[in-house]
Structures are given as structure tokens and as C-alpha cells.
Image 1 (cartoon, rainbow, N blue to C red):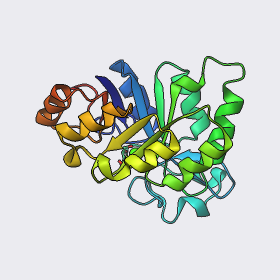
Image 2 (image 1 turned 45 degrees about the vertical axis):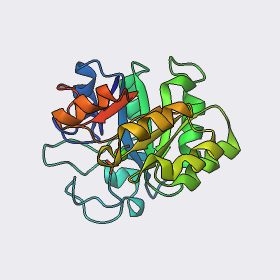
Image 3 (image 1 turned 180 degrees about the horizontal axis):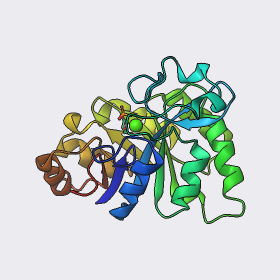
Image 4 (image 1 turned 180 degrees about the vertical axis):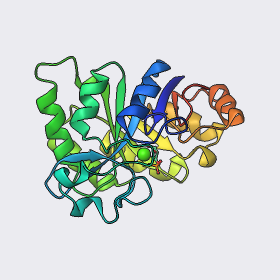
Length: 225
Ligand code: G3P
Ligand code: CA
């Protein structure tokens, strides 16, 4: 069972920061999950919410700030919001990167950034999973290129998104752990999809994930899993 650090290692160090990703890498994670938005000047930035106030000392929408303005903000611990390109520099193809497309209009800029990046670095398409609750963004990628592994996110049962996964020719399905059953895991695996539930922090859920043979878990606590 693969271990993906959620937002880096969100249970240990401030989420979606380079410091949190560095923490996750200490535990030899198989992969890291991060959230991506686009800021006003066009850069792809790594932050979960549409707004700044929960995780930083900024107030307002990420999309209304330029990258230069965002560089002045800090988390309560004093960490910065990273750009996606900085995350790629840091990880340097040492593990899988599951990029969750959170912000609108992030699909094609993410594809372009990665296409440019893999030309002469250790990064390859196989290192990436592009995932989203916004299935329309995943379709934008599919219509543009077949090079990427696509992950379909859902808070509901896997069976509710199987049609989308099939049309997308998705690689993986990413259900909320509390919506998951053993039968749903078997159903998805039978159709050929990897099953990567989130956010699996509870030891009993880690155990049932193993028993049900999910392919990987997305966890805030990669030190435990
Ligand atoms: O990608 C899995 C998980 O991160 C989805 O939910 O709200 O933590 O981004 P959320
Ligand atoms: Ca996420």
C-alpha cells in the first residue's frame, strides 16, 4: 500500500509548505499530495483554500494577489506559500506528486509547466497524478494530452464516479475514506483503477485500508502509516 503525504505532512508541519513536504520526504513517502491555485499574475501556487486567511496572514482571494504580493505572506510558523515550480525543485522526482487542481483554470497551466519541466530533468510523466473534484478540468487535460495519469476525486461512493472515470480513462479514484467500503474497493479495482482514499489518519482506517487492499492512502501522518 503506497503512502501519500497529504498537503505534504499536514498533521506534522504547516500544510502545503516546502517545510511540510520536506517533513513528508523524511518518512520515505511514495508520494505527496498538494493543492494548486492560480494567482493574479498567473503563477501556480500551492495552497488549499481559495482564500488566504485560514493558513496565512493574508486576507482575500488567492486569485486577487500577484505572486510578488504572495511572497510577503507567512503562515503562523513563518513559512511561505510555495509556487508549484518550487515544489518540483524540492522534490526533484524523488516520489510521486499528486497535484490536486483546486483553483479554476489550473488544468492547462499545470500541464504546460510539467511538460516544460520534464524535458531535461529527472521528472517524467509517471511521477505525476493530476486529480480534481472538478471533473471538467480533468476532461480539459484528457482532450489536450493522454500523457498524464488522471485521478477522480469524490466525497461520495466510488460507484457514483465510475462513469466519469471510464470516460476519462482515469488512472485512479480518490474517495473520502468515510464513504469507502470493501465492496467499493473491489469494484474499482476490478475495473482497473487504483484506489487512493483520503484523508486516512485514524489507525483503524489505516488497518481497514490494508485489509481491503487499497492501492495507497493519502494521510496527514506519513510517520504513522
Ligand atoms: O486529494 C485528496 C484530498 O486532499 C481532497 O480533499 O479538501 O483535503 O483537498 P482536500
Ligand atoms: Ca487536496
